[in-house]
Image (cartoon, one colour):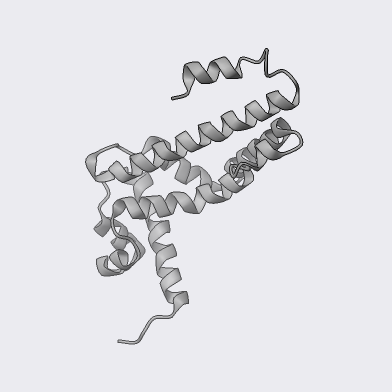
Length: 170
């Protein structure tokens, strides 16, 4: 058998991710087997396992393909808090993300799968943990950005952020 090129391997990976989106959206994540995805992509299960360790790894790769560009636009690296006007920077990032969601069918499809088609069962515990960790990180970055905006505007002493943090943040 001939060796495959990097381009062939990337095409197979892309086909698997595209098939996962279609089948997950149709059946739900827990009711979709890796065999279903391999068949929809037109590849063997061995090819699927060469690219992805398990369903959770495939699901996470599908999510990253959409969420990484969104997160970049949201300035979730902490740049918003360091900006001259953190609230304006955060607003600009949110507008960018909302436009991406409104204009891009793939983004909407993957976010629909993530919010409506994932049943949190043992097989997908890694997916749930990844989701919870991302949520904690986003909340922390939002808190940091809002506290910096409050500090810059000189309202830290009368801003509810400090009491909110004590009451609401673990």
